[in-house]
Image 1 (spheres, rainbow, N blue to C red):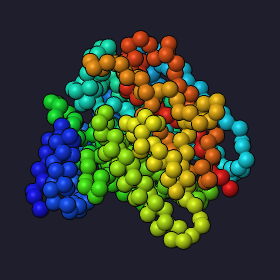
Image 2: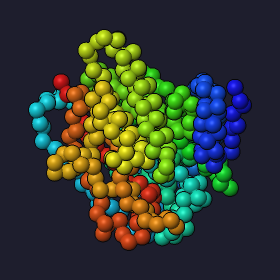
Image 3: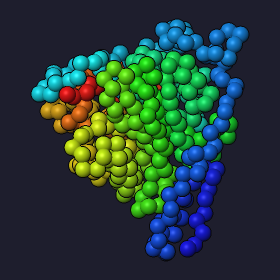
Length: 391
């Protein structure tokens, strides 16, 4: 077998895929999936962001109301934030278990290194892209909605910001960096970006967590996923949660489809292991992510037709319940304007019920320069849903 070239300093996603495909085609043999990178490179950061530490200490404020007030004070000179409301859905045919809803947030927060380095947001002032501004906006969004489960992509400030701050607020977490993150090509970067999954430890206990390097035809790619098995403390019911970020850009539709199939395969095996093969018991499942795929793509169809019985929660905003939002991302790059739907919260419709969905800001709210901006920190909008267990 030919030697596969590996580019550890980022910017190598396309080169890596090309090299792997050439190797696969020439040898005919699959490459083994290696997770050694994912299990290493977990730094211990001691210089936490001082802006969020209590005076004279390295401890973050443990009170979410106090922290939210701190964010609002830091942002008092910015334009008003988006006013979004929840659309509450009728009960339908299925009864829910007697417990308060589970709030889930899905959000590609825009990696800091990419935002200032290579993404070229043509209408966004550089000051609006500064981390000193964006970090408060991101935390304000999270603290406003207080999700029990938080799924994020393009996280490159996990160790110095999000993990310590959210841990202080009672969240457990897991982070999986991309093996060859493009952030590492940007001068002054803070490390690779990746997927992060947070859960409220007062609501859930962690049973298991695994990081997955997604494959295409058994060839490891540069995209990853985090999968957790959680148990609800009030109902004692188990559920699986996954967060992922599939390959971006036009021309890679086939790779996104293969990566999605690989993730579904892993999740099917996990669910069968949990309940026992041949069992009729169904485990509630949530899959959140930036799929970089419009609803017309093959990977979307694979999720809608999966034997796991998945549906997309944000279709509930449409009148017919069958149509995705018009957009989850709206940006203007040097190459032109992009307004489309790429982000999803998938759920098992037989075991989970959607109780409420956070609506989308309209074009007037977003503004003529689109996203990101002084009043919103990412080019992707957060998705927030309330779920209940079905009986």
